[in-house]
Image (cartoon, rainbow, N blue to C red; front, side, top):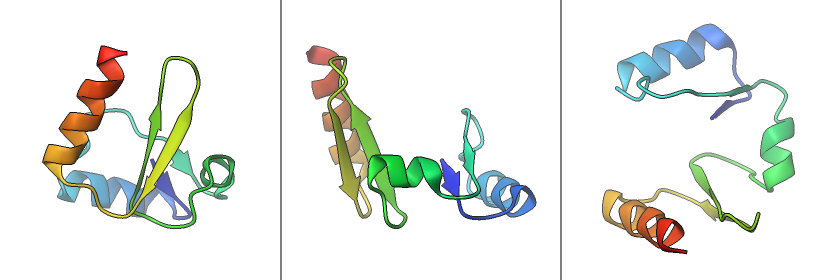
Length: 75
């Protein structure tokens, strides 16, 4: 999710970094970030099927991300 920027800048970033292959949400006023307790990018929110939310602040590597997703899918 992109936040606190305008649509044209976000589209440029997504296209330029090859991450435009999935749906993104534009959070222009930061309200979605605030709801998840995110203060800055990068951040990843993991949402379990019981609604439990864990926000991981900071960069996350491919291996850790894959492991976290695998764990979520196994529950």
